Length: 143
Image 1: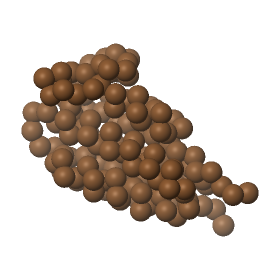
Image 2 (image 1 turned 45 degrees about the vertical axis):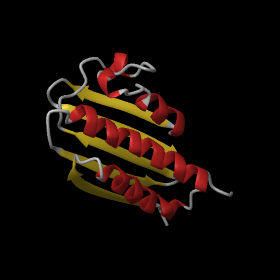
Image 3 (image 1 turned 180 degrees about the vertical axis):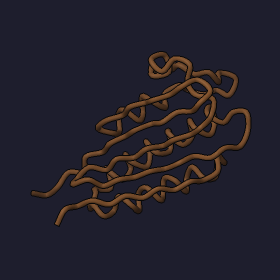
Image 4 (image 1 turned 180 degrees about the horizontal axis):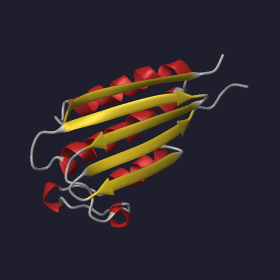
C-alpha cells in the first residue's frame, strides 16, 4: 500500500495558534512513526514558520495562515502560507541574525533554525502578496 495522505488547515494569525499548529502537525506526522527527536524537530520548525507569519507577515493586523501537510512515502511535506506583507529580500532574510523587528529583540534565526531541523526548506515570497515556506522532513525507517 502506498503511504500518501494530506491535510489543509486555515487559522487566524494569533500567537496562541502557534502551539495549535505545532500540535496538529506532530499528530499528523505520527502516521510515519517518527522518533521523539524527529517530532521535536518538526514542531520546532513549524513554530518558527508560524511565528514568522504572525510577527512579520501580519505585523499590520490579523490575517489567515494556511497550514498544509502531505505524507509521501517516508517524507512529510509542510507548507506554511500567509497573505501578509511578504519579504522584500528573501536572500537577506535567510542570513543568520537578520531581522526587521530589532525593537522586539528578535534574534533573526527563524529560517536558520528551520533549515537546521528540516531536510529541505524553500521560501517563496512576494512583497505585498505574502510568503510560502515549504519544508520537508524525511522520517527514518527501521528497515
